[in-house]
Length: 159
Image (cartoon, rainbow, N blue to C red; front, side, top):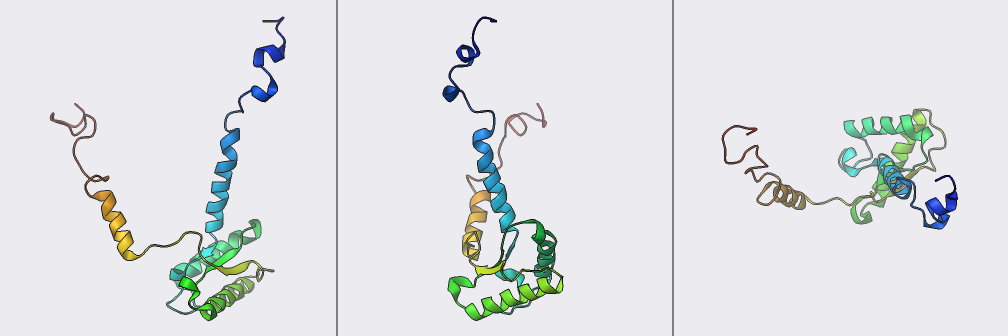
């Protein structure tokens, strides 16, 4: 072993495998950054009806954003009305959010608050119901029956 050159033992540098995790780390880091950026979206349901006033959950969310805003590079996104139906309301909501940040003492937030579609598109109530029952109905998660030996044909749980 002592007489064999390193190049011969390991093979040429361009043909060696990557260190463990090197290839996938950038993917997971991108996923984490996208998830963090989605924390800074104020959704339509966080406002009271068709007004620019935040509801209780929206106020709580805005305060959570305010605590982190100085430490992250993400914009604050005010969800655009469906099909850009009400741009005046969207602008009012943006102004209200910017004003609240300013009241909290945050500076230069005007350039970071934008109106845009949310990252993920919502679904209708009918689609949600169909998805829910599709997972618990036949062929889904809640079908019952034996799993391994726990609930199989013999008595007892762990036989």
